[in-house]
Image (cartoon, rainbow, N blue to C red; front, side):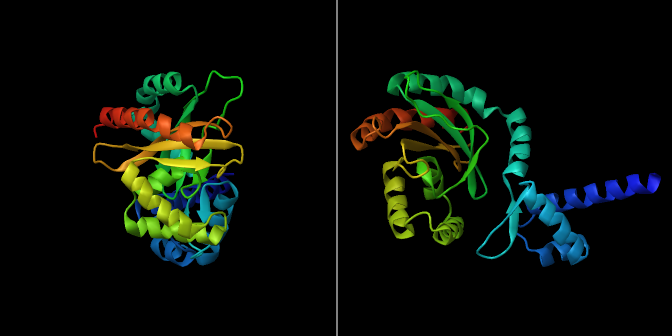
Length: 251
């Protein structure tokens, strides 16, 4: 019985070592790198990584076959982060005011590696409204909130994500590159039918004390209401609200 317990603890320690390596070292590593760094056999690492991928704690980058943290691990990390600084608590009063100004659903997203995760929303009071699934992760190249984060990333990181976008086949990367330039000039992004065919949004960046873009706030609604004209109308309110939250975060 003791040996069985020891074996279980050993496996848990190895899993923790793999996750620690990805969170504290290079964000993407292959089986050979992990094996060498952790002094474990490749077959053992491959078996553990496969289990972690299956449960969503790791994901494989199809462009280089390396692995990075997945949505499940990211959500665990968010719990710790939000305990020390509850960005949602700071954001909700601002989001509620913006909801009342625009009449639409307001969402709050944070960046995690090459993804973004919805962490809060204030729903529109209208009968037909856009809603999101809190905790859901999406790539940065899809939707207004993702694009506005992507636009302000360093060029090296941006290039990696654009390569992922090209591999996915979900979006015209040439058009996206041109759009990113416009986003940096205007200070906000817009989307229509990218993540969901019936949804449209406008998104503005949120910055932390180091002036790094860490997430985005968006105004979201059905495409029938969020027309291009309406997107332009709500953008100034949104940019002001996102700047207010950024200031509260130390920007």
